[in-house]
Amino acid sequence: MSNPTVAVFRPDDERLDRATDLLDSLGMDPLPDPMLAVEPTGARPREDADYTILTSKTGVELLPDGWTPGGALCAIGESTAAVLREAGYTVDIVPEEYTSGGLVDALAERVDGARIEVARSDHGSAVLLDGLESAGAYIHETVLYELRRPPEAGESAVTAADRDLDAALFSSSLTVENFLSAAADRDCEPVALAGLNDALVGVIGPPTAETAKEMGIDVDFVASEADFDVLAREAADRLDC
Image 1 (tube, rainbow, N blue to C red):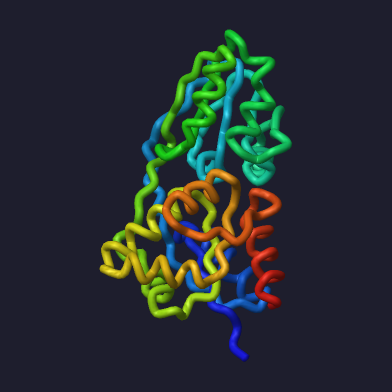
Image 2: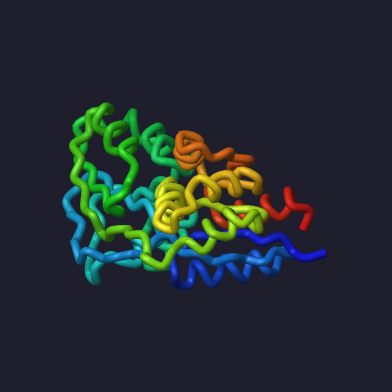
């Protein structure tokens, strides 16, 4: 019996290499199909805030040399916090729930009148900014990088259309949107969507699940933690690998 074919959409760097190695070690045949390409902006976050928020590992890696965060340093999840610590920063706040809403909940009662610097991608969730502004904070956002869909993306959509895809693992709302736009570019969106809904679909986080459902995708499970390794292992369990 052949191993299940599982699509993974991580950016084409060490994250994709690590993800495919993990899937392979868990008894799956990875189908790497990067749906995100990172384009750094070269922007420098402000250093005079009362709270500074980093939302991703990529954002941490793109911080300019010599940059010092203002006030309390917040990470939206433990994986981002770990990279910050490795870079020599002290992380003051990590929410219990690794989502934008979770961070808003963690900060809401302490940020009235505070200045908050948010350093992230151009596709950051509005939930974070809207929630903190509603709590009375003054927000400044720095876009550290832009996310684009690589023009060659879409092999997984064709595989889904051919009913040869056993599972797909989405790590963000943008990977969901880009999967369907890549399918449309290859003139197979309806059949790719049907094939995807015959496969196991796992996602990281409720926002990604909501986006998928809004776009007609049947989500089978949300990872118990906002971490790709957890997503992959829980998919393996469901596929009986």
